[in-house]
Structure formats: structure tokens, C-alpha cells
Image (tube, rainbow, N blue to C red; front, top):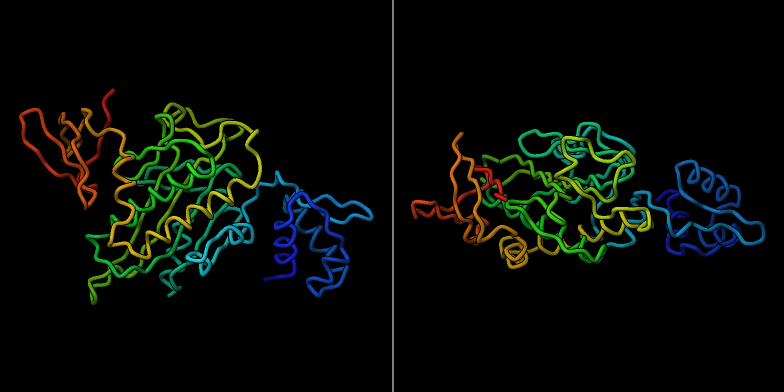
Length: 327
């Protein structure tokens, strides 16, 4: 880590407490001048660091800037080897990680950005990604699984996000098949997995797992076209603090536990119980046709079992259909 990153890590581990410049310099074996320059640089980046004569420097507990150092501080043993990088702005974190994958980067790189200017969801839909209010994160994976099992990445990630929100925000979440995370009937998180297949091995060469979460409300609200269907984890500034770093780390912690034994489907019970429209009538959109059906169950391959009005039953895979929940 750089001197600045080490100073940030020290202040972040003692949020709200003052540490003298002399103590920081001594602990990190750097000069007082290096400490001062690093503090000024961090302040210019937006970190709320107070400097008081004869007391030292203190990082405000309410600071909520995405930071590789802060995220790393919250990672558990299973996630400690992840390589975290945080950017100010990027067209798409998925595209940034795909470039790394194509250049031979190893598994475990995680790229986050304060904003995306061209964020994407499924079917190339735009994903609203304003600065400072969300988590836009992509993970480079090289799993030894077939293309047919790639759904395990997306569905386990949905559970990892749901569990993280429930742990950090203490709010209930649900999952709309296949992988959208909902709160209070509205979408709070979208997940997009993109992968390349190795023809030689039959396994995925790499996968890029993209996760976008609305953590707090944008200052001007959501765009009109999504205001009725989108929500955020937190609805006001009373929940300020180091929430995004904690939430990002908790997602990674949860996901890496599932990923370590992906084909064992450890996440499946949590996934099934969060699907919110089982037992309800849905509209199945398939091959430009719409049919009414009752959602019955989720099988071990995360396929949706439905029963049509004529009594026929079918297992649906995510790539084949879309589901619209009636009512």
C-alpha cells in the first residue's frame, strides 16, 4: 500500500478518534511531512478528516466514500485475497473487468466505481448509476464450471446481496426470478453475469459478475421511467456512515463462501425462500408470445416450474423467458 493508503487504513480503523501526526508518522515509519501531504490529498478526495492542533487527525464516522482500504478492512478470511480497486468514474465496471480478463488477469479482481456513465443490465438495458449513491461492482472469476452451470454465479450472487442488505440495513429483501433483488415491491439491485467459454476445456474461460445496488436516493431522485419500479436500500441521510464499504464487503464475504463450493448449491435454500411470486399468477413472455401461468416451484437448477391455464406444466430457464408478475 502507498503511504496515503496506509494512513487512510489507520484513520479508518479509528473512526471518530484523534491520532497525532507524530503517532501516525511513528507507526508507519514515515515523515511528518508525508503524513501532512497524504492528509491533504485525502481531504481533496472528499474524505472528512478533521485536523485539530495538539490532538491530531480524525476521520469522521459519517464518511461514506468507496475505498479499497475500507472494504478490505471488512473482508473475512475467505475474501482476503480479493484485489480491490475503486475508480471515480467508468463507463461500465463489467467492461473494465472484461478487458482485464482478456489480458490474462487472475481470478479475484474486484473493480468498483463511484459512478458508471454507461452501466448496463440484462438485454443491454441501461442501468442508472449516479455518483456517490450506489455500489457498482464487478468481480473477475475463472470458475471450473460449464456454461450450463453459469446460472449458479448469478443466483448465488442474488442471495449474497440479499443477505448483506438484511445484515447491514436490517430490512427484508426478496428475489424476483432470476436475480433481481427487491425491497418493498421495488427493485434495489440488478446483477449481470457475462462469460466466455473455453472450447478446449468446455469450462468457462472467465466470468464477470456485475452487481449494481441503489444504496441511497440520488439527490434528484430516480429518472421518471424507473421511479415507480426502483428503490434504494436507505431512503434518507439519517443512515449516513460507512455503509457502502460495509455493504460491498458483506456481499463479497457472502458470495465467496458460496463460490468456494458453488456446485454444492449451498445458497439454494435461501434463494428459494426469497422468490416472492411462488403460488401467484404470472405472465410468461416466450418467443414473442404471452401466456398466463401459476408459478409453482424452483428446482435445483434454479428453473421456474409453472402450470399453464390448460394444466400443462413446464420448467423455464432464465435465458428463454421473461416473467411479469401480475397484480
